[in-house]
Length: 433
Ligand SMILES: C[S@@+](CC[C@H](N)C(=O)[O-])C[C@H]1O[C@@H](n2cnc3c(N)ncnc32)[C@H](O)[C@@H]1O
Image 1 (tube, rainbow, N blue to C red):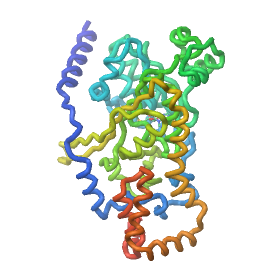
Image 2: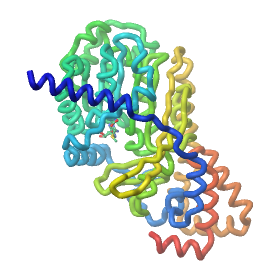
Image 3: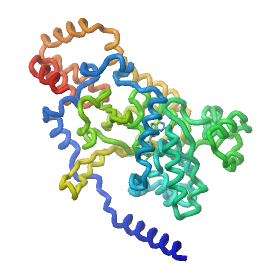
Image 4: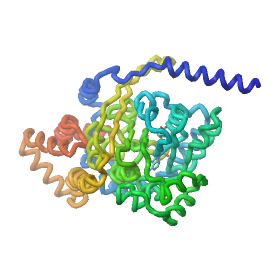
């Protein structure tokens, strides 16, 4: 009796907190922050292209110019991360999500959500609580994360939540998603219903799921999902694997379905805190525990998603000043908010999607990074000297061309290229590293 009352009281408190929570997304202008950061010489190392990152050990760099980690190293790092942060204190329910993505509340009955990289369930729980008819399939490359998420969901006071939560292990950037979500023929023919496909059922069993109800209803697979949520997950995937990861999300969405995106934005306070030795690629950093983080500008997000066939519905920076009262410090946080749709006429996009990825790879990596592998150090030095002779104007146009690959805004590249090419600042840079 007492337990039930206590639960009710907690739930009431939680709901009133939620109602009181102010929803800010424009405490400051992102452009103003950008100008400040880009004129601060102590932060120069953040703007260098992989080509300029001579301090990085070349043997550990992948073709994308970033330091690579194998899939098992990647999931091991996240396993360790989740083992270390297993206490309830680390769990923070993302209550703001339903305000940012109200479609999760207003969608059709029995809609399906795929939460990718669910971690300890911070995104799953508010979705399940907020909509009583929604089902959430959630994956993570870390088994430890899935255990944490299950514990969190088990500990909730709402019984109806547990039956609608289906966790499974998966590194979506390597293997894509299991076929029981959307089998090959369904992907191919725009999710037409097919006869039962045994291999898909095997896949589902292998993934450790024991609820076959929805599979029976759809026969060969679930027929895709209505929503994919990518909440602070894509930034953890190495840059060169992002196009494949997004392609996987595209392939399991139903036509008309939405991809809801939120992640770290360029010049977020946590990016600026990384020391030079944590930089593993352009705007990519690796923490001491081996987990990585990329910081997105809007152009990169747009290129990745639109290049994969999605239609952009919303894309903006959320700029929030949060205050640490204990330390008396204010912190400027930058996140990217995005909403992308898979067209109703999904087949139309299969060509665009292939093309988009090729375009992305060609523009960014073939030009900048594959060249790096081919050219010898001496050749690069000669080229650098030639460029220097051609003067500042030439440098600006090089920077502009690189920036047109949309992985960068023109200004930091211009500053980085210009300064990295002058002897004195170069020496200063080396001493920083
Ligand atoms: C910062 S957490 C975000 C968790 C959750 N989405 C949330 O809203 O709190 C990133 C999660 O992505 C997972 N992850 C990283 N790379 C992944 C990959 N390639 N495939 C699946 N999960 C991945 C990590 O294990 C981690 O749990």
